[in-house]
Amino acid sequence: MHSEFFPFVIEGQIVGYIHHHFANNLRSFQEVFIFSKDSSYGGCFGSHVTLHPMLKSPEGKTGAVGEVIKCLAEKELIPGIRNELYPVVSSFGAPIFFSLERAAAPYFGIKAYGVHMNGYVEKDGQKFLWIGKRSQAKPTFPGMLDHLVAGGLPHGIACGENLMKECEEEAGIPRSISNSAIPAGAVSYVDIDGCRYKRDVLFCYDLKLPEGFIPKNQDGEVESFRLIPVPNVANVVKRTEFFKPNCSIVIIDFLFRHGYMNPEYLGYLDLLRSLKSGDCS
Image 1 (cartoon, rainbow, N blue to C red):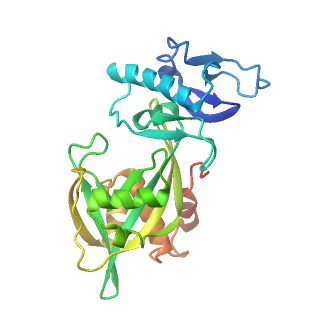
Image 2: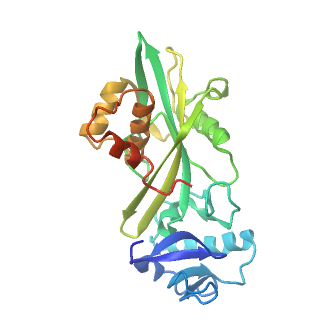
Image 3: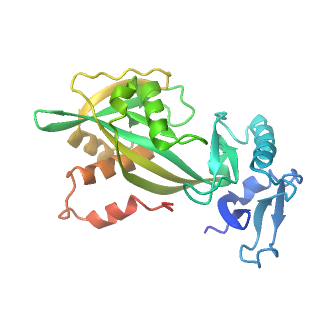
C-alpha cells in the first residue's frame, strides 16, 4: 500500500484508504473521525483513520459521515455530488458498515461496484457493438465513448435489477429484452489519481439485441449511439483513448470471451491477468 494513504478501518477491517492530504480535511470533525496509531487491534494497522466509537449503528455512521461530506462539498473538496449512496463493505455481499455518497467513494478508497453491459447485434455472421457517446454535461469523462449501458451499483439494489433499470434509463431497452442479459463475470482495477483511490469491481453482462432495435437515451446522459463492428471497436481501444477507461477493460474482456483474442498474440496472458488487477472480492 502506498505510504501516503491511511487505512480506513471499521470494526477491525480495512474498508478503504484515505490520502494524507485529504485526511487533513477530516481532522476537525473529531466527533466523527478518529486518527489512531491503533492499540485496540494489536497495532496491526499502524496509523489509520476510523469512526468515532459513539457512532454505533449503520444509520448513525451514514448520517454523521454524510454531514461531513456535505461540508466538504460546499468547500469544493469533493466535486460532483450525486446524492446516491454506495455501501461500505469489506467484500461483495458482506454486511454493510454504513453508506457513503458516491462522489466521495474514491476519496475514502472504498470498494465500489458497478454493472457494464455489452449490447451487441449479429448481422451476416459478424458481431457489432452498440457504443454510446457520453453527454458533454456529464461531470465525469464528458464526451467520451461508453458502453451501451453502464452504471454504479448503489445501496439496496441487486445487480440484475440495477442493470434493467439502467437499460431503461440509458438506452430505452424494455425489460422484456433486458431480462435476457447474460451475466458474464467481472473485472477489477485500481486507479490512483492524486487523493482519489478507486477500487472498482465491474460485473459484466452481454445482451444480444434484435437487428432492428435502436437505443434511445432517456435520462440525458448519452449524446448519441453508434453500431460499430467489434474489430473496429477493438482498434479504437488499442490505438486511442476515446473510451472511458474502465469501458476499455470491459470491452477487452468481451474480446477474450467472444474469440477475438487468442493465445498466439504476444502478451495474451499478461493482458488477461490485468483484467482482474484490483481486489476482485
